[in-house]
Length: 121
Image 1 (cartoon, rainbow, N blue to C red):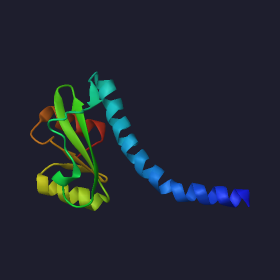
Image 2 (image 1 turned 90 degrees about the horizontal axis):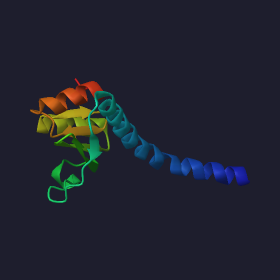
Image 3 (image 1 turned 90 degrees about the vertical axis):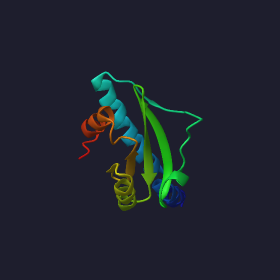
């Protein structure tokens, strides 16, 4: 009986953990690429230019602001890859899985970094 309850608890919590891990894995890929390139990557906490999901289309789950050297960008998580891709096309930016990579187009430094780090095309 204890094992059954434990199994139900694990299964009921597993979906939320997977969602959190996806963002962590993406950020780890970016950190690894930055480290190998000798660049400084940090989560950016600019309170003046705070970005939220209200800036983006429906289906936005959350926004992570990042800073690579002196250039800022946004990683916007969507519920589905289709929603991320649609918003990326609308904004003329990049999408990666269920993420929109915003504020990168027209910034050759960021475009090159993301193309290398997560193989954007």
